[in-house]
Image 1 (cartoon, helix red, strand yellow):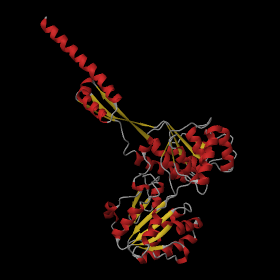
Image 2 (cartoon, one colour; image 1 turned 60 degrees about the vertical axis):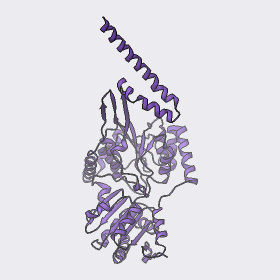
Image 3 (spheres, one colour; image 1 turned 135 degrees about the vertical axis):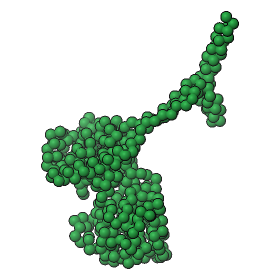
Image 4 (cartoon, one colour; image 1 turned 90 degrees about the vertical axis):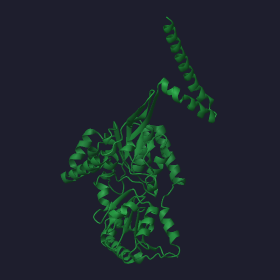
Length: 456
């Protein structure tokens, strides 16, 4: 069996040399959860209530699920201004700096419209334009997330989405945290609504008397929010079904055990379902990291949450060598990958699957969570194999443009008809043939007219 040493009962240590390792590692990889049963039935009921009952049912859901009595769902301008004034100037400056850096990053590569013209009157290309209205969901509850406001809203603001709406759960007194409203202001949010959970997703997807219907919903949330986003997909677009946060650290003998432990804990403290994994070829390092985790958890404010996450969704993996470490990391396809290596830059080329890569000993995940510049909304649950971080492209839509003049249709029309015949679609063939017939008639008429002029 794979070794599952759990000194002090914190998290398992696995060794790739042990029998049964593959089974244990496979369980780590299969970390996505698919909610059904009671959660999905409950979410469907909430969505139906909001869709049918509008504002009245939405306010009832806010009272029932957010435990706040809110008569006016939208944050008014005076309330917003007053909240911003309550934010400590130093905190205000830090939020502004974060928004500025994220904005600068996302401005680097904004796709633009393009077209190509061909001889004979052919044109093809794409029009790129922003979505008309998007909804940003910002969770509340166990923690306050102004950084999520910035990461979700700034890319939409950069491409000038005309309306950026934000939904976030109110506190018991019906207010929204000042830090969250401050982040919304510097990120370019236009309107803020006091609502959380599945009912907020329903309001954004279907629209109510007070909440306009959006074209796309982005942002993380609990299982109710994730399930609601999945169920309204098709009514609106969504970014992804975001799962619990996760970090995987690949470390060698140059790594500092206390730093690696802190990186693992920094993600584990988010919630009980967070994933935190270390892969190293140094058995001594794995044990020292384990010991450091035990020490650091004692003074951690959210230590109970982190400990539960590490015990259930964490592991310290001892591999044969660095090549095997990176192979396992690619199989895991983490949201956050930390390369705590002596020559981390040289190993970048060997990373295939990761949402974001943090290179070297002085790049903790926390800098990416807040203000490094790249987005912290990243693929989770192994979807880094095929998904990318949130970016400006998520708030743009592409429309293909095609134009054929008669000479171009005459050049390619017969091939189009032949392909239509191959598929048995005679209507397709006819739509081209009728136009070609007119082109031929017009050509014959022009030739006849020229011949008549010559005879004169």
